[in-house]
Length: 227
Image (cartoon, rainbow, N blue to C red; front, side, top):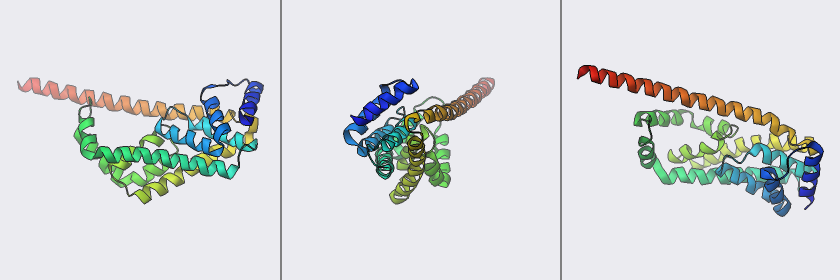
């Protein structure tokens, strides 16, 4: 358990907590090498609460410790990203447009017209969304579902996903490799970025809900006046 021992030593030296997601990822990499890093990233795509900004720098740290090669880390984590994205693409494709619309139509404050506008937006900007979406927390996983629903051409989806994921993965793995035992420092900085993105998304959702409620209120008021 070379990596686990090195991870625990580095964590103790930097007063970082052992165990948790980082400990789980370290165990995977200890057991399966670079393949374990790929498995962790595939699961991160399927379960967005698993943070790639922890797993990827740790993979870079593992490479710096000689647990596996840097190129292997880049290739396997990118493969994991693509496999996870493909699984979610398949979910969207299996659900299809009609089921997705039927499910969304049952949700409060959601209208079919909103879904249609989203479809139109994705038709115009889907390639950009898939590529750049790989660099945005949470969204990086979820964007695969509308891509599947809209049946984006699979070669295009794979190319964009591979390119975007490779860039995102490479940045964090290389930083983790350069920082070595201080790999966890990058997670603190990215944590702020992630919180900022999620806060912006939450504000957008609140604004949408506020506008929708306001419009609904006006509609009811007009209806009561007519009566």
